Image (cartoon, rainbow, N blue to C red; front, side, top):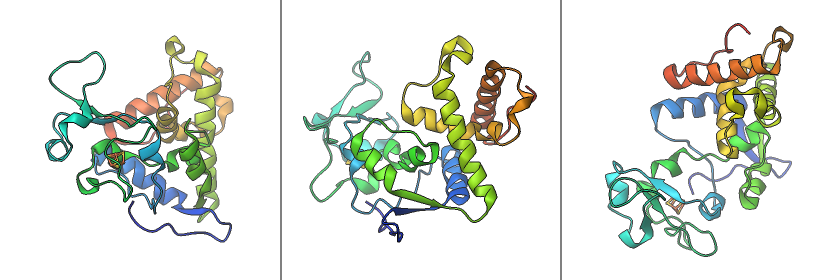
Length: 226
Ligand code: SF4
């Protein structure tokens, strides 16, 4: 939908330098400017059955979406935020054969979406078409450090999935995208030696703290003392 995909010799799609990508996507969380994804002609995320949220303050977007395609989120009525519905096939109701007709004014949720988060975290999205695209991305590494950081992101995602009970109340995100975001924010916890953490619960606390610090300040931290 944006730039042309740059193919690698291994027939994957070039996802860019891992560290540069990580910096950019973390910065996009804070700035709200969204991700720049070389989607090419891929429309997988527009066809994944997602109900696309449109916040009440996204006036420019709401102005170009026919009201009949908008629904209110379950449990709400009349006022406030909206969702773009889907077709029976699970396509976004705005999608047309030639692409998204409101691309320049697409919702913030679409601007934020970057399926490389699943490649980065090493977890499936839960949608076949997105997983096919995520499986094609190939990150590049300009140094061993880049490779180690990527390994830490994957380890963070794996920890959240495998050790949900170690988290307060046993609560971890249910959606793969949210698990991937936790992994991006909390990966520094897994960069250093893990033997300083006495228990999985101590690791989980460090993950929670790292996410909270990132959400509050935009800074990456290792989670503090175990
Ligand atoms: S609004 Fe446009 S970019 Fe967003 S999911 Fe629908 S068709 Fe795709």
